[in-house]
Image (tube, rainbow, N blue to C red):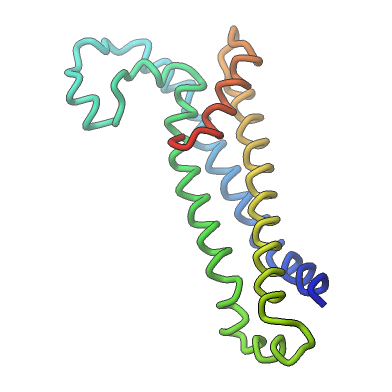
Length: 172
């Protein structure tokens, strides 16, 4: 019964998973498509003319020249992806049992020969699987988008290393 509940829960949330992946892919592509113009703007600006305090307050950056490299720009843009990811995680987590309660199907589940802890476990496992799939696909899409917009002389190996350091670091 737990396996059936796990599969049903995964199947139920597959559509929302696909929608969120598409939204994050479009967000990533849209923000990264601004990189070439940002790079040109940063190379033309006299960054030393702008006071450091103003850069810290306006852009939360100690050095604006970081935006002129693909890995620096992605690191800055990454915070917006993290906001979307947090919203998706919150929706998955809160919707796991609350959805059953709102739809009135929790009574049906309780009447089945399955313990409450098995119900919660199946829902937690399916949520963890969906969230992991979301991260893997999002990381892959973001890296491919970075490859599309990378500088002509940039090393793919260095970009790969910097990219995953950004994804795996706790502060982004």
